[in-house]
Amino acid sequence: MLEPEAEGRDLVVSAQTGSGKTIAFGIAMARDLLAGAEHFAAPGAPLALVIAPTRELALQVSLELDWLYKPSGARLTTCVGGMNPSVERRALYQGAHIVVGTPGRLRDHLERGALDLSALRFIVLDEADEMLDMGFREDLEEILDATPEARRTLLFSATMPKPIAALAKRYQKNALRISTVGEDRGHGDITYQAMAVAPSDIENAVVNLLRYHEAETAILFCATRDNVRHLHATLIERGFDAVALSGEHSQSERNQALQALRDGRARVCVATDVAARGIDVASLSLVVHVEVPRDAEILQHRSGRTGRAGRKGTAVLIVPYQGRRRVEGMLRGARVEAAWVPVPTAEAIREKDRERLLAALLEPVEVNEDDRALALRLLEQRTPEEIAIALVQVHRSRMPEPEDLADHGSPSRDGGEGRPAHHREGFDDVVWFRMDIGRRQNADPRWLLPLLCRRGHITRNEIGAIRIAASETFFQVPSAVAAKFSAALQRTSQPGAEDESGITIEQSPEAPRDAAKQRRNGPNVPAPERRERLGTRGDGPPRGGPGRGPGPRGAGPRGEGKPRGSFHSNHPKKGPRTPR
Image (cartoon, rainbow, N blue to C red; front, side, top):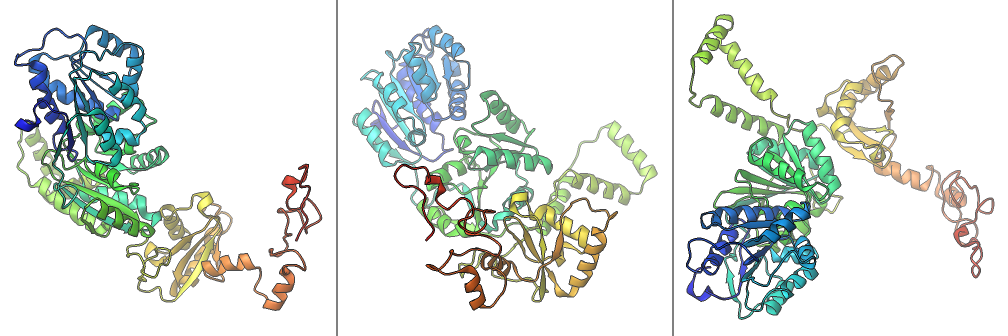
């Protein structure tokens, strides 16, 4: 930015997040804004305007520039959505040297006459590609059209798609292109990993990742507000110190969440893509894409929350089995090399815990007299071994338990619904059982497994594949323990038994696919009889199930109730349709 050929020119800069762009354009502006003086004159109309796509990024930029320009006496004003606009207008009327804000709020102040751009020398568009993606084109164009012709325009973007090039061509003159983006991979300070999991195991994979890495600060990205809310509640319930960031949170709530991350009161942040820009927490070393980003640009911006200012970071993509091919294409488009690794197992996490515990307890400590006296009292009442065991147990009790994943294999290569290609030892000969709950009742292996173990008096290792359908769930039990399991089910289902779930568990005469096919095609009767029962085209009602007429449910055979097509029966032209 300080090279001689960049002096006095408009600039188009491509650089990765976390590479120091804010300081770069802050230094580049200082030379012209101060004009050789050590301090700014009294504030009036803004001399520089910085536009950022999100509130978080605008506040972060404002903090950086305030630190950079503080010795020069610069007055900065921040204008972002979610803050009191009347307070911002008062600050603008009182004068400012530099204004930082989001497009919508700046446009509002401009239209109300509070923002005077007549003296502007610099305008900076930070993360311009994101602003266009978020639909701020009209806001940006109105603001840019209101700036003086002589102003310098600095355009920053991690990526440089065609809309950005068009914007630069329209509003810049003889712009110098600067790029620090390498061609080999997305970010040299970030290690990328990807892991394929069963969709039902995504939350368990998140828990195990957090426990395995034990990052000082981690951020988890979801696609929607609802998913952020759900995952945040789940992590809180499991004992993690977590905060949430999404569009439904007020600016005050966002500021409190970020401050909790910075001062260590929270270690995990669950966020939507609105937080992918502007979060700069020095201790953030782990980014988890809980839901796959929609494109390579979002992948880079999310991952860029770590690996900043020369620090190393890890970005992990949790990929449902069926989405692996799309993610591999996205990684190629982002020029990112990701290692496909399995989800950390519970045993691997416990081994890490042992290493971390030993390292923590063997560190040198400073001892005061009170601590020494208390330690001597403990030694009088307990042996050193008992004290050490108690210390280990206290340490472990503070950590959430890792999860056992239902599937640990890799996706099958035969295109079969993303199921693991391997089978577990001891499950060659199995018996299928059925429960009368499914997805509609929020069935989930996390609480189904303990229920089955409690009702059937078996261990979780004796339960095989679990298949959750809309209103029922099937699971495998090895034939060797099926009789014992059935007997235990009968005892625990009797009146007075300690089971309040109200869930019926019974042996299934067929596998899940056969059962589903049976329900679609009717009872297992010979083909000619089934054809006669179901009818054929042209000589009776079309396909239907046993005891069910072809009309609406419960209407009986066609002709006795509302005919199919009755939605149009009062139409002046069509009239009722007759069965074929």
